[in-house]
Length: 394
Image (cartoon, rainbow, N blue to C red; front, side):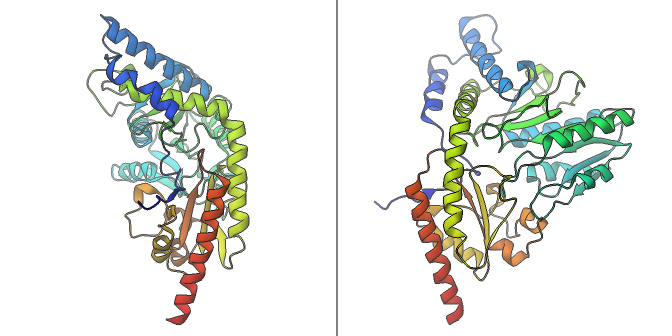
């Protein structure tokens, strides 16, 4: 049997850590109760497990357990945050600020709200992918109700200055007669970088488990309860679970897995980040020798495991095809990999469409090794050289 490619696509998803699997298994068969069932032990066991996970996730971002609302993932959390604020604060204003490099799970809800009469300001980013705070300052208006800026970009890995943005939202709130709510899609950031909703003045934060070695299909939305208390219009109605904000039977095994994944990530964050950063720098040291290669995004203010490059003089589709036998990588967001359009993130950085097409995103993770880095670098370089030779011959 042929050897499977080396997995270097951890921004798309991560393998579930075996410790997470072990924590989840009893809640499929032995402790299978509905956490909303309050009259017997099966429900109590499930409720206790959900409570423990909620406490773990809350502690990870310096929130209270009551402020964690479980969802099916970050996409639902983003939709709940953006549409929920738009509906609840409609009488205060219809202006929303976000940035051009957001995930489609933020951009598409914003574009939907435009059809309902909301005004959306999509701020540009600088060449390194980071927002210019002066642009944000100029974008605030008296009718601004929401600012949505992701913590870590899913394609180029850059980290936005959340604390500074949060402070600006608070400052502008004091100038208006209503609160300006600050939301951050932190799906790629949880467990990888320090997050503090109090210190950063974040009012809503979208999270997911499967980017941090947890299961797919489970996420959460942090909803601030005081200073200010955030109001959201529910997008799912039914049984009134999750304080009435998100109805639906809680998926206990997934929630347990989410909590365990976050617990492990926090315990290992410092040493793991050092190790993964070393792997990334080793890979970039090799690849940077390739003529016509471009690093996309800020060189250091990025996720430890992210490396996104564009290559001059090669066809993007041919490059990915040539890499496939040895490595599993992507050219952009997995959610839009079927799109024929170039990455909106890379074009927002100023890349040409041709260069944006010829991009590769490496997502290095917990289970990768230096030996794999060396194999990937060697094959990447030889593939680029081969494609350039073919282009010259044609």
